[in-house]
Length: 168
Image (tube, rainbow, N blue to C red; front, side):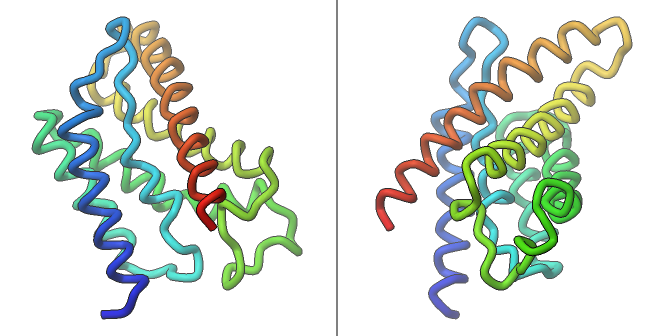
């Protein structure tokens, strides 16, 4: 087992513990409950495009669902953003920037990494809340919770990226 795999395993376990012990207990104003664990999909190396990310994303969402008693919504949303992360990157980046072997989200210009993080976060949260409420009559709640929770999650992720980039 090499160092990258150990780091991925520690990140996986750490994010599950952080989400279920700390972040699931935050319910600010009745709408904001950050889903910080999606940073795993964002930080997973782009050069490692294989089935392990799909499997890890599924289990990450599943563990969050088990401890949150949310019935599979997190697993579905996490799998979806895992499948669309490369197409979203292709839309955001220029063709010359798309060299996966050297590409890292932290090394992108701020506005491009913000766009990437924002798109995947809003899609993830919309799927989670859409599946949770699952009625057209609840569309206002879905949009409100998606917007507020996404903004808070994006801020947490950007703060984390700031600390990660300072450390290196």
